[in-house]
Image (cartoon, rainbow, N blue to C red):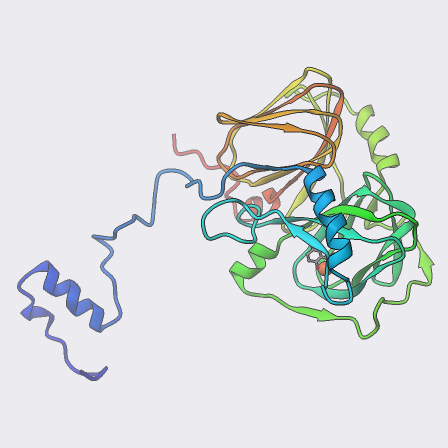
Length: 320
Ligand code: GTQ
Ligand code: FE2
């Protein structure tokens, strides 16, 4: 049958026959779909999960022997959400990855359309991310931004291997389509300037005292956004928890990733319990109520896609 041939829908004697005819015109009926396209509240596709720095650190240390940054663009470990068929995204819009650059090593400069941010777990004054030609120091607890389009490479001039966590909106870019990536014509973009005061750096030594001076919120914690500058797709907040304090977080439409900057504690997400330590990461996908309980005075970094949901007016929706 050719594409422009006449199809006599009127000849259908049953719904089954009509459905069969619809195939010929590349249409699906909307009345008998196997899964509804609209549903009363968000579906939970991604699951809450916990990754331990001690595992990532040991694996990256070994990768340091077996994988060179001359061959791999980045020596990183992806925190892929453990759901069937997924090998990349940590939550639907974001990916988190542990990365290591050995002492004396570089990871070449490149630029891409996804936005990126890192939080430094083991850094040094002499370990840098070179952002748009400026060497930005990577010290423990620092948060560094590489907004989309900025050339960035990593340059570890210290005597210790440097470890950190990357956050990128790659899953969102893959879904929407506008992926662009380019390596720099030189190995590492020239970094004539060391800029410890770069707007792309939130130094741990600066933001922690500022956070601790904040007044406690109704939720019982101190919370502070790191920014401006902001990225369009994800935000970052630092949270201070007192020993034995319980921070309850209601479910929201935003996806959350938490990194332990300091301390120890437990996160409970609907029956699951994650015992965390410094450097660990937890994913709390949208529509999961969760609570964090610190065993000792602790600091968490919370990264979320709330800016995206706000932009689209989907951060809250009340049909009651
Ligand atoms: O360091 O530039 O984990 O481009 C994934 C993609 C890190 C980076 C990742 C990247 C980077
Ligand atoms: Fe990158």
